[in-house]
Length: 254
Image (tube, rainbow, N blue to C red; front, side, top):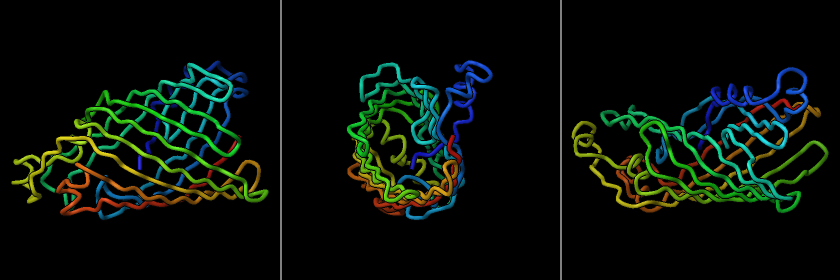
């Protein structure tokens, strides 16, 4: 559930590229837009629809810009692996509906390092570490996962991606603790998250290519919170540790 419009990042990658035709020759990938039906916050039991861009761009072999992976630089490369510093984003939490009276948690831009391995044409693996440098989220987060993709037919592509994420104590505290002052204002039970937690997830997608340039994709996924996040009052009392999401988007490939 970590989706972001990287408008500022687009300006950065454009500045790094050569002007004119050279830039157009090096830039490849896809751009599009779509809607996602997802939980109102991490741990919520109610969903809402949000509209997001679907961006997946590469500038040669050096830079990438992705809605889900942020802005990265493949600083170190092997035959089938890359190691890249990147700038990403993690969402915070609003203070409306069931969280009315609680403090709002502003989302944060993050700086991180990502390792990616292309095992074969169908399987790839990744591991990343990131830490916020803006906003209200603190600490660090570690993620690892795999992506399996396969072409079912000439125009159909399917993918499946399991993942595991560890959030540190401070990161968990930022999103799942409820202070006594917040509890008095909101009626939500006070809670002190004093350890990190694991989040397990799996998502899949199915894409249909209308033409070589245009595709339509449907996707769905589910995540499960554990430990200190699962036991938080905003999850255990008024939310849900198991969360599902889904949506679709249209992309133009070049």
